[in-house]
Length: 373
Ligand code: PMP
Image 1 (tube, helix red, strand yellow):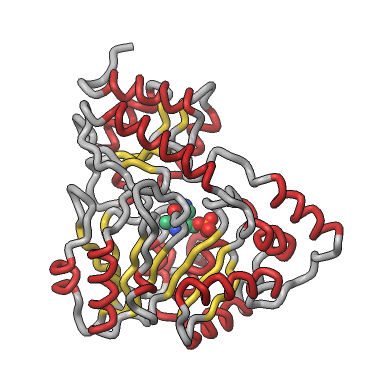
Image 2 (image 1 turned 180 degrees about the horizontal axis):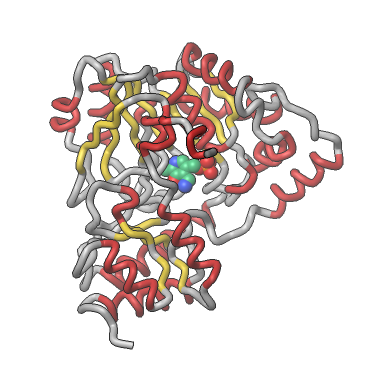
């Protein structure tokens, strides 16, 4: 009977297929786990200490909805120094996901179209459906580059929002300056909101970071501490953009998340002083290990950032190939979870070198077909 209570808006999508792989991992003895979308290092010591200190110091009540001043003001100063925009305001969200949810609620009316590049981060499409929008997917296979002409021809009078994620989950591909600048200009010309998900901006291997906010002052940016400081469980993110949008997001935060966890915000303020370059250098080396270990046998675009690679399966569908990989104790994610195509797989190299080496060994053995056992 209770099934009848469930709202229609929840029925447009399934629960994340990634969870199914995580559940499998929990049951498996000694899996080779290249499925996890979070850093393999722990929260830096000084950040942990800052959180403990905040709890001991009684920072346990609600914070201001827009964020504890200790963090919000530090972020605002950083953002002002980076962009110098007259109207760019920041607030602290409950993770980057919280910022994403509030942006959708604040911007998308029922029937509005939202442009998403395929492959995409798993939350994008369900969130668009939840708020009654229509996801318009732009296929970026096989090189995962943004074709500005295709974006321009996908724009209609109902287009409200474009979602950009660079460096990207699941491909690890980083948009070029030309792509970013072109998208920023197109959004400005057609008066479309541009949302830039910059959660992987710290993990960049071949050049400096670029944001569409540099070319389009109205860009809405969402970011957070989950990946840069391994704080996935602490739920601290932030969003910045024009004050009309940010004020609306803060208003909705008041009636939903209320605030990000208060002690974790003090910790995040201290995290801004931690240099993560050592981690980035380690991940660049792991990226090279994966690319050098697979590129002779797999069609694989060299990732420029994040900690993912998205190779094409050498036989069968993505699901068939991943099922066989899992039978060989290698946990990876079928590309169909992130895409209309079931032709690739995502692997995360946020793992110990020894695990990556074992993963490469299994993938090399699987390249020619299922492995007899
Ligand atoms: N955006 C992208 C592209 C992500 O990969 C993730 C996490 N997997 C998020 C947003 C959400 O991160 P958070 O933990 O900050 O909510």
